[in-house]
Length: 228
Image (cartoon, rainbow, N blue to C red; front, top):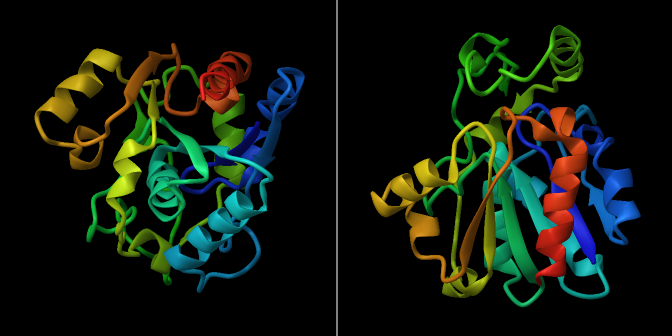
């Protein structure tokens, strides 16, 4: 199965370098996407530009696809399910939840010069980064790409209720499935509260398992694809 991999904020397609060969070994066709505004100098890239790239990859696949979004990009995976419910076999969200209609995509940190730079490790101390050694921290920070302001502040538009019939797998790294269920039941994640087919899987990692647990993450994604 074609598996589209979308990394979260400040990351491009290279974030999946350790996951891609593992998925290939499992017999799948992984495609790690690098989106507009991720290292191409397009600081004016918008959320719509990024979504268009994701949808082009969905449309280019010969059959139905597994769309994987990490962190904030969970919203992009959900937007793909909204725009192409007949093509997205399953949406996988790693350490993230989809923003609701009308909400900003990822306005988590202040913009500087029209972009949102990586804020350093301070905001991520604790469960998010507990499994990152100094080498991994340096690797991520040194390659971090400032997020265009029109992406971070782009407004999410969801239009097709058929997205709720697309199966979702929530991969829980720095939080547990039990915690995620509590948040969803409490109405804190409205979109997933309406999902007809929602499964959870735990992974013993911080927020970036593609760097610290690539083999385990690949097994989870391969299992998700096999279940489609």
